[in-house]
Image (cartoon, rainbow, N blue to C red; front, side):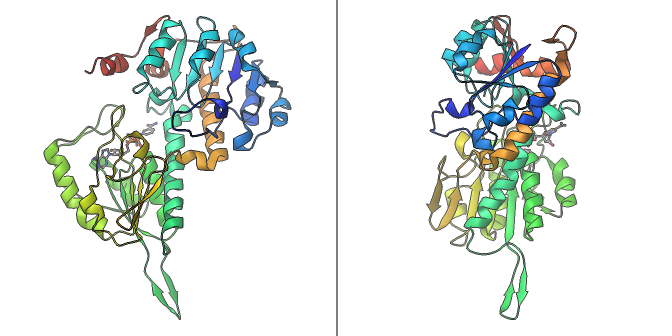
Length: 385
Ligand code: NAD
């Protein structure tokens, strides 16, 4: 079996971002090669996450300068994001493409992958099950994002997070309010607590209150009626009335916070707007708001994708690409996710990826196969259902 690791930093991104992460590390290529898999790494694929061509070569992988020469032979192509149309056109029928294929927002690309007879594995669609945890790239990257957002906010705040009692006076701990306590939010709570802040959090799924409290945060209880979650544990969209109750109930918490971090997402849909400009105006000048969702529509009115904006004296951070600012850690985790996926389904006897479409994990994340889009969730989304 031949695996090609793409150099994502050379792939175009419409926002101009240069991807710093890589889908393999020398640690994962070592393990792949030991299984007898031939691994080809596109030149400089790991450079921006701190891994040189030489380090990959020493593990038994081959470095390729022109990836197009090798693509027709690939059984599996692994990327952080998505290969280009030109690269896909070079692949043989039945080849497997693994990456953040962003399927809900990339319908033409997914249709093209299907039409070419390629098997597309979207890491975003890996189920949230115990067995799949080790392959869960959304979680690995969201955890790092939670950490990074707190660090960025702390560095922009014109104050400190911990309480400091000195002969020159006492500084009270900073107040941090985290909206959305999923994977990223919980890591943000843990990070802010470690830095000594006083942390409050809110989520529409009341089941997370206990998790927030176990990390030392306080949970803001807002009665917005029935909210629930999907069978995969994702939040459901709120009604207009529920949104209004939430926004009203959060106002005081936001107004008195030094840092607000919003991490609310709705899987496969535009994120909800959680903070409007009039609420932002209640915050002290110099306060910091981090909008994790700025690039996909925004939780905060006034946030600008890819930028740090000043909205009436409040610093609103929408830089995005959070895990890329800790590219080595992000690469280490993502490469492990990809390795674990390959390892789980690799059949050494036939030296092939065992594509059992009835398998719990593969039935979720294989989104195209044998000329068709195989995910009902996606076909429904494309139909607007
Ligand atoms: P996500 O990124 O989809 O959303 C982040 C958080 O925002 C969620 O907690 C969601 O409830 C919350 N949210 C949505 N709308 C909101 C609003 N209007 N106001 C406040 N909060 C709002 O979620 P995620 O981090 O991917 O996690 C989703 C769920 O999956 C969680 O329950 C998580 O624990 C679970 N999970 C399970 C596994 C596993 O079992 N292997 C792995 C990862 C995550």
